[in-house]
Length: 181
Image 1 (cartoon, rainbow, N blue to C red):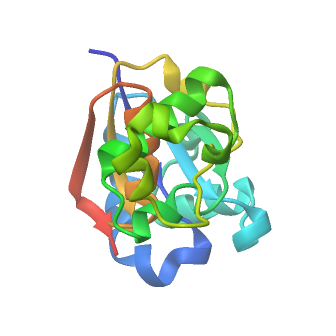
Image 2 (cartoon, rainbow, N blue to C red):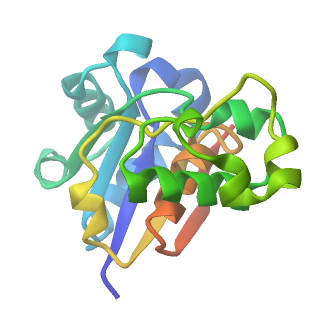
Image 3 (cartoon, rainbow, N blue to C red):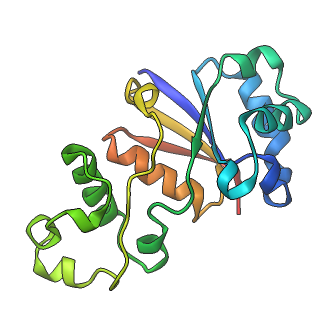
C-alpha cells in the first residue's frame, strides 16, 4: 500500500505544545521510508514560513537530506473548526467536505445541505456557521492510498487535517505516541 507519513503543525509557533514530541517526530522523519508531507499553519496566522519550519525540525534532529525529500504544505487555520467545535459529527463534516471537493465549491454555504444531508441533519448544524475547503495544492496527497498522521492538536488542527484526508476517501492512522495537545 502506498502510504504517506503526514506531520501536522510541528512548527516554531507551536513549540510550547509540540516541543515535547518534536524530537521524536524528527527521528520518525529520519527513519521512515514513507514519503513525508509536512503541513503547517502558515505565515498569515503564525508568522512561520517554510524555511522556519525546516529549521525548527532540523534543530530537533531531522536530517537536512530527509527534509529536502519532504513535501511542505502551508495551510490555513480553522477551515472545519466551526462545526468541529460545535459538536457536528465527523461523518457529516466529511460528507459535506467531500461534496465541496466533488462540486468544486469553496464553502458549505454554496451547497444545498438539506438535499445532501436531509432536513433533520441540516437543521441541526450550527446557525450562521459554515465550513470551507482550505486553499493548498493537494495533488501530492491524492496520489496515496493511505496516511499515517502525527502532530497536533489532538482534537484541533490534527483532527481537522485528518478529516480533510478522510474526504479523499483514504484510511488515516494516527500515530498517538507522536501527538500533542
